[in-house]
Length: 458
Image (cartoon, rainbow, N blue to C red):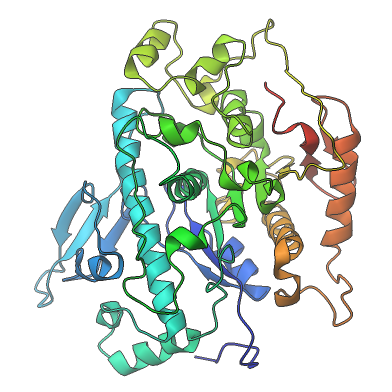
């Protein structure tokens, strides 16, 4: 293994944790994560063991032992769909196999319970990942990692290169990112940590951060202090359904910490056109990016975002409104009017919100390139991913990582053209009329009038 570069002892690598979507794995975002890494950041892509991956395996003998050592806790629900399997005649202990769990794309008690269970596990796993990389940055090899390989010395030598190389010892430096269900996971993670001791929960929260994570390590920053209102957050195709339940209701009503703290520019949202034109979900996205997600809006299409009880969901079902899926979307009622509030654009920081024309939901993963015929709504899938990467890198440069990411010359000149072009697109988008989108001949970008994002309702 080649050493991490540069060799400057003082240099810290920007570090990102990326959460995969429903049906994804740690490998299905290799193009996106690998491209981001090529700009000079460390990208950690865990594979969630919550039943959202097609199938995943847990190493022999681990179960919750090493994870519990790192976090001091384990999810109360356990892991879904776990079965044990080993090769015929194999002498090694059986491995735990976590199978995919299928829940309906409907607002129902069954869906809410299932997605809540998955979110519990995902949030707990993210705390494990944070504890593990904090240990690596301190020069400690987390217990259990060498069990993947009989050559413990090699394993330790590989992991030891991260000692004092990760930019995670100061608050708000760790970058959080996800796609689809992964975006929902990161939204819930931000709010779970930020509001842990700030609000009264109506129901049992899905995740309560352990303030001592990483466990008893001097020099490591606890998770509760790492996540702040200035933490960089990249959300690809936000999927709102997992956030709509009674147990998530208390946090759904709260703004993202970044938006509530006046640091909305720390949030990057990139959507596919497929998800952007899914109006029901986009209403939820608008709420996620607003200062008051729970504020009551006019129109029946908003009810699903303003209630968190199976009773109301059952009432909606009588009117055929159980689906929460692009194929089941209802048109915006003719009587529903956009609500626009005046904003001082010279002082307001805005979410960076874009979508890529002629792109599909799976365009932000490797599936768009691997199976282009199956994803007919996407055109030029490699270009779509490239736009995602360029937006992410430019946004990170603007978020305080310019000196750590490739793409600038020593004099500070931008060499990939993203800075000027995204600034131009954003400026033009902010100047167009209500509900208009901006597209230019640079490529496939379209941008929302960002000064309206937090107040404009569909």
